[in-house]
Amino acid sequence: MSDRPSTEIAMRSVPCNLCGSDDTRTIRESTGEGRIVRCRRCQLTYVSPRIAWDPVAQYESDEYHEKGELATGRPGYTSYSSDRPVLSPYFGRIAAEIARVKPGGKVLEIGAASGFFLEQARAHGLDPAGIEPSRACQRIIREELGIPVLAGSLEEAAIEPGTFDAVALFQTIEHFDDPLAGLQKMASALKPGGLIVITTPNQAGWFARIARRQWYEYKPKEHLYYFTPRTLARMLEAAGFERIEAKVDPNRYPVAFLIERISRYYPVARPVMRVLDRLLPQSLQARLYLPVHYGSMKVTARRAGMA
Ligand SMILES: [Zn+2]
Image (tube, rainbow, N blue to C red; front, side, top):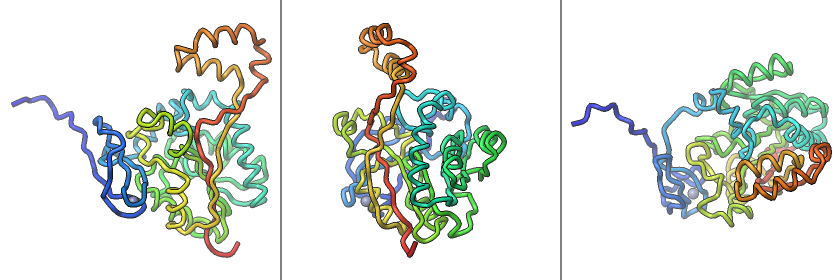
């Protein structure tokens, strides 16, 4: 007998969040981080069994936000706070779209991180509020930006039904333990006809299809769900949404940023990046933005009922 303390991690099996079935096939074998499976009945892909931990405790850690995964889910984002030049224009475009549909509306962001979107929402005449578990981020939103923020998770938040004109969540829904319940709560937080905007990795996107099992978004400790436009649309319908539209979700990055991140993550490309770095003047590298599409999708829908 060993007297070493147990290092076994508690794992928890869950049925399909969309159709309730537990008839699945394995997409990626368990590595001690959770097994990625696909429901044979509705095709939803999710992690089961999964590590039985408390998501709030996980996201409360400030290191998590420094890693930046929650903010974008994209490779190459190592420090959320230093990504303002990339994220602020991106969120500005989304805030402008929301403001066109719901001018002056009350908008709630789930997983507000450092508040870059909330700031842009206010700049576009919207009335923003956030939900955010990280205490460090809550402080930035409340004290530095002066925007109201609810502490904790969506599950815990007490939201008066029918309060908001729009709800937004960016690279967040894939982290939920129970996304259907989350979407139902968002539907209830919205006024009838209220707008929801979701970005999340697209499992039917070009990168996922090429990479197959090696898709970088397969991170079973963090990403518990892998949606396609179809599975997310079905879940939105089940939660009381209609007029569902899925689009691609590209972003624009400064050349300097792309050269630095590609060099860091793809050693094979370093010689080429070094040549580009030498050829292109630094001022141009900072000013010139290139559109890049990693295979994220942007899905919008309306809460059922009259607008
Ligand atoms: Zn299913």
